Length: 231
Ligand code: PGA
Image (tube, rainbow, N blue to C red):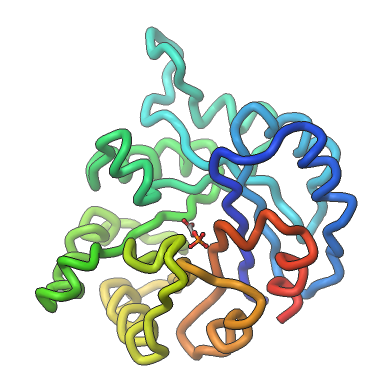
């Protein structure tokens, strides 16, 4: 069983999401995780969560205690409305909201305390890869997680592959996945993300050390995403 995750980012509305779920064929052995904008979570969990389809949040506050954090949503609030998964550390959140490895780790810990599974996004920029520094860069991003003993889900998303149509070679993906897993003694899942679509998904999902995919743009089309989930 692989994890096939969608990241709608800031797209969709009530009608779009309703149509998407009525067009999405859930007939797959894989675990499907659909990351929606926060405002649609509660209703979608109620209507669309099943045993192999889980609604996910796309981010969360690093604070779990209620308080003066205007605009934030806590892990406990996600739990309250039945959310079971949350994407954290996406490169867009790192970029636009200045999130760093420390705060992403805090989010992970708070989510864990309320039993929500994190999908922790990591990935290097083109500059870092061109300087051949990608392995060290990823080691830094996961450093804090090394003390954890639970099964962590990472999504390796090279920034240069997100929304660009560029996909790393099989060797590059496998190398990074093995590199990530080599930091841990427990079972770790590594998803690949960045320009995944139904044409390249089977090849990616067949890679020995890849445990799933995280799909942005192509996930907005329910039929396309169903093809990926069934590949
Ligand atoms: P993409 O985005 O599939 O559109 O490249 C992936 C992501 O940002 O998670």
